[in-house]
Length: 217
Image (cartoon, rainbow, N blue to C red):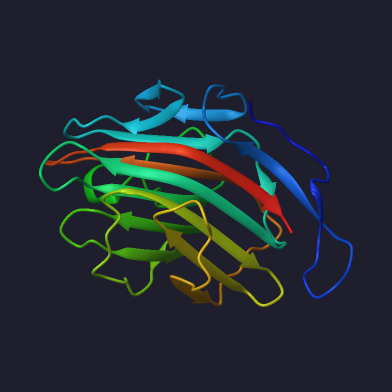
């Protein structure tokens, strides 16, 4: 079941007795309370399918509550692109938006909205790339990636340093080495809905969100 806790526990991060607060935690999607789904394929086996392996499909899911992100946080999620055509397509996105009722772009648009404050796309087709969208403007992509599998992701935001570090692993253990390191990453005081989208085009795949968790640190 998803839950919200004011204080999850304490940890050491160069200072003693600092607290971390879980904003939400979906270890699976047996319950989708607190989520807004737009044209998703729905839940099967406690997993949330943003798309099934059919052509020309798009699905988006958002947290139903908008909150400010101008503070340190970790967002972790487990996502799988599997099945479908020989080259699974097209991929998925993680985005922060001011709406939670809109479907994103199809095909290589991977569910991305044109009005995102910050976003990442993970393409599985031709480009096999990661791209950061800063205030809706695409930054230089990182190519030769492989998101065509079941992967675990961590996004660590440091507000005072304006940095975002992403970690990707094939196991649920967070790696030591950073996969993508972004600087000049800024959230203002505006409240945003965090969400994920996925899309297929002329090729397809199952785009499956297995879990997600947001912790303010």
